[in-house]
Length: 215
Length: 359
Image (tube, rainbow over all chains, first blue to last red; front, top):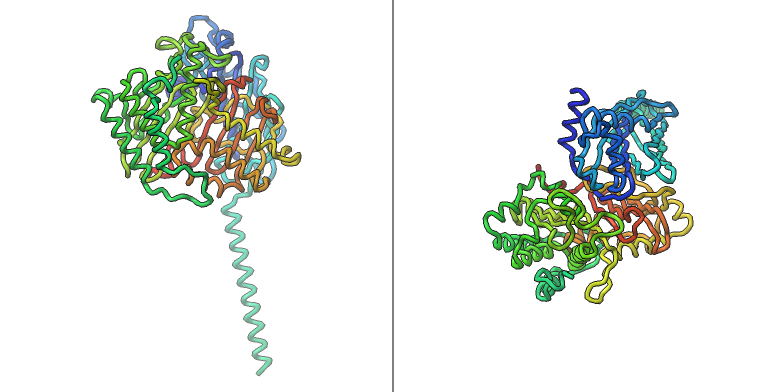
């Protein structure tokens, strides 16, 4: 499925309005999902009533009162250019995978939410400590920000300390990746059995020798 | 000004009914061990639901009822009419008898305090309507689909999902601007997550009385943060601003990484205060179900976090969050306005009764 088709499908599936009816703020809420080889980004953008026409102006570049797929995609890509994601200090490219745009009138009322979905493929994280840093500077003059990490679905990924700037433009997130748990457990079990077997054989040998000495 | 005290919706006889009903259900504070739901409440709720349905015509019943698993389940919002189109029966389109029966149904599922909170929120929206809107959040009559933004008592909706039953799952969905109450009933159990009680104005006068629909949520939160020592505050207070709900409407099923201070780092008195804050949301539901839920939250206290952002003196702007394995509560003033509060109550493991409903 190409991106344009995905954008339209996504728009149909997720055209729910925002939770708040905002006035003069552009709310930018990001949720990050961390996995071994990727970071998923959900970015919800809700312009308030007072700045909705300004935001619409950024998107509806031909001023026809509609957001076309091309205009939506162009704005989504531009927005993502304001986002920097680093893993272990190295910038990773962010790829847009979906975007939905609300009805013009909902945006005009301060309740329409633009929903962007993106992923960053990251080098396979080996076991041990890692760090992700996220920074969003999109339209910082009129925006308020939320950024949160979702609890990882992958049981090997454990999130640690989170650090943000006061305005929540950015989040630095420490995390650890556990070594491959099932094979490690298998190895530990095998080692344990071998150890127990050796101990048992040695004890049996010791008892046999003692009995022989008694005789 | 129209308010519940002067309309048939909250006539003295109905208030008396709600009080008697609540007393009959036995209002209690959270128990230390899980209560066993015995089905008494469910029987009353089913009876009230059937009594409400009996007041409706066939076409009204069709408009009001949905399949239990229909998409209507997640079709709730805190937004006003004219921006968000709710389904179900609109109070403004009902007769006095039908509204009475609808409110009796809501009251039968909730506690006395919970029902009072719901009516305070609704009366607040009538106040907002008469003021033409608030400093934040939009104006009455502002352009919107379907005739503009509308506030007030007529703009609340009720819907039933599934068939009222003491054995099979069903749901009551009641809400309007700044209110979304979702009660899923499964046998003897009932669940009120997700729900969104909010308030604008946060303080108003009605019949000479000062009403603060979410005043206790505010005051108890500040009391708790005020009870923490310097070392505890270091963990509890986030060093960044939180200007909205993180898990508001449309965020079903999401679990964020918790932050703040672990309840196990609080002393017994502070833990009791934390539970008391949580009870402001949990206790909206009938006492039988709320007691069971509070026992579950108490059992999970060692894995429950309390996070705070903003002023620590009552009267200032502050956001807070309680997050445990089976509960998420957020309290968030909107856009720097102390007179406009949004909150959310979720259970990431049991929203819409997911744990109780067999697929």
